[in-house]
Structures are given as C-alpha cells and as structure tokens.
Amino acid sequence: MRYMPLLRASSRLLARLRSFDIYALRGTPPENHRGMRAFWFDSLLASMSDAFWANYSSLYVLSLGGTRTQVGWMSSASSFAGMLMPVPGAALTRRVGQRRQMVVVFSVLFRIMFLLAALAPLVVRRPAVIWVVMAFFVLRAGLLNTFTPAWLSLTRDIVPQEHRGRYFSSRNLMQAITTMLMVPLAGAIIETAGEPVGYQIALGIAFCVGLAASYAFSRIPEQRRSAVRRASVAEQVRSLWQAVTRSRPFLVFILIRILFDLGLMVGGPYFTTFQVEVLQSPASTIGLLVTLRSFTRMIGLRFWGRLLDQRGARWVITAACLFIPALPMVYTVASRPWHIAFVDVPSGFLFAGYELAAFALMLELLEGEDNTQAAAGYMTLSSAVSIAGPLIGGWLISRFGYSGDFVVSGAIRAAAAILFLVTFKPFGTRRVRST
Image (cartoon, rainbow, N blue to C red; front, top):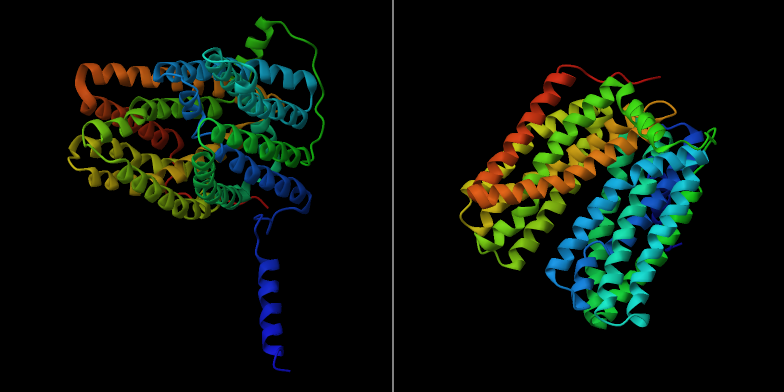
C-alpha cells in the first residue's frame, strides 16, 4: 500500500506526457497528422546532422592544409552553385511529377557528399585532397538547392495555414535546442580524436543521421502531380518568369524580402570581424553573446509563434522588421565588447519573428501547380543577394569604414521595413481564421 502514492504519481506523469502535444497536432485535421509527424522527425534529424558539419566544414579544409583564401573560394563557389541549381531543380521536379521523390533522392546525394569528403584523405594525397574536399562541399551546396524548391512546395501542403505559427515555432525551437546540444558534442568529438580524423568522424555521423532524416521525409504522404514534357532552356526560363510574376502579392513579397536580405548581407558578415578588429573582443565574449542570442531566439519563437496564428504572417514580419534596422546602428556607437549585448539580446528575439513569418508568408503565397517554379525563382534571387551583399559590404568598408557599412545596412533594412508596412498595411486588423 505504501507504494500506491508513487504509482498514482507515476500514472499522472505518464498521462501528462501522453497529452503533451510535441508535434503541435492539436486542432489540425487528422489527414495532416502523418505528414506533420514525419516532417517533425525529418527536421529533428536534419538539425542533428547539420550540427556535425555546418560549423566545421571550413575548419576541416584548414586542417588538411588549406588556406583562408581557399576557404573563401569554396564559400563563393558554393554560393554560385546554390544560385544556379534551383531552376533546373524545379524543372526536373515538374517533369518527374513527385516532389517527395525529388527531395529524398537529392537529399541522399547531398548527404553522400559528407561521406565522400570524409573518405577523400584516405585515397587522395595532399595538396590535391584539399581541392577534392572543397569540390564535394561545393557540390553539396548545389544539390541542396536542387531539391529545396520541391521541399518548399511540399512543406506548404503538410501544415494547414492556420496552424503554421504554433507548428513551425515548436519545430524551430526543437531544432534550436538540438543544435545547442549537438554542436558542442561535435566539437568534443573533433577535439578528442584530433585533426583531421575528428572532422572525418563528425562528417561520417552527419552522413548517417542525415540518411535517417531522408528516410523520415520519405514517409510524408503526397499526391502525385501530372508530369510535363521535357522543355527547352528558353521554355524553362519563360515558365519560371510566369510562375514568379503570376501572383502580384508573391512578386511584391519576394522583391521586398530580397531588399531586406540585401541589407542583412551588406553588414551581417562583418559584425564578428568588427568585434575582433575594433572592439578587441575575446573569443569567450563572442561565444557568450552568441549563446545569449540563442536563448532570446528561443523565447522569440514561442512569442512570435502565437502571434503568427493570431495576427498572421504579414503582421509579424512587419512588426519584427520595423525594429531590426536599429541593430546595426548600435555597432556604430559601441566602444566595449559587452556593448554588443545590446544587439544580440534583441537580435535573437526579433529575427526569430522575422524568419518564422517570412517562411510562413512565402508558403502562404506559393499558390498553384507552378509553386515549385516560383520557389526556385525566389531562391535564385536570394542566392544572388548572398553573393552580392558581402561584396558591396567589403567595398563600403574599404571606402567609408565599418560605420559607413553598418549605416547603409541599417538604411536598406529600414527601406524594406517601410515597404512591408506600406504594402501589407497589417496593423489594426486581426487575422480571421478559416473554418
């Protein structure tokens, strides 16, 4: 009898765990549950896989004897490959007629690049192995953007629009926690095994966990779309242009978002450089601030996720974007390493809202059978911005210094935020839920 209270307490705990809506399924149609569960597991495993390579690929090249110049070339080539591949990826998806198959096949190929990069030093000698590994990482970027348009299009069908705020905030929070746990683990494995063996082990783990993510995605149900005949390059470009311009709200959204992202890329890549070169920030301080930003981002995901379902994506993205332009200005007056806390604390919170709402709004505006082509158009423009933005920022720094670059970055962000406000007119209205 004395064990009865313990048994009752255990029973209540199990009941609470069963009622905990880990997949954010509550209130969603039953026919969506299988896809939402599979997508949740894909996201979990993909974030675990990314934690073992995303922060360490450049360091792996350096450990093999590569130079920082070569790492820069690899980054630029990866961005260029990412810009080229969405259009043929969308065309292939349209021809095959199955988005899920496209994602699974190319995500497996994408993850095989990790395994090949890990095994390359075993069969290729230095210095040739440096270029071989760099080539695999560049191919990785191209393969990733080949299937991403199909991934975006299918993601739109997985989660009902009125539940995307809660679902994606929960998913993103899970990914953030996973990353915070797995990145230090990957670092510990690399440090224990030594260089370059530690990086090879980490890439092997990324490959294995990534395959599990691809399998989880393969469990998502999908209705087959009708395939189309092979089209010429001119026809593909024309189809892409029609897909992007057919919906005026989508076209306006991606143009304003591209402008906003340009503002981010003009200044963003140089914030850490400014902290090291101008503020003389030690690595420990930078790491502490990054951790602080991660915590405020998790808080922001919960906050903005609820608002997204209540007010809609237009309201959230405009509200977040109106405050973000002030962040680069703090760098222009910062004189101590700890001053950057006034950037990183609100940055994590605000960008959680921006990223969540931008993703949800793009899914909302991707309409019709040609939404894969529309997604490819956005991705091509976005990749072009990721190449041009840092180049513009570097030129501004050489001419006007860091302060000039950060002021321009903030001004571009402010212009885009005002365009969001004027175009969407989101305030003063409450989202009407569909029944």
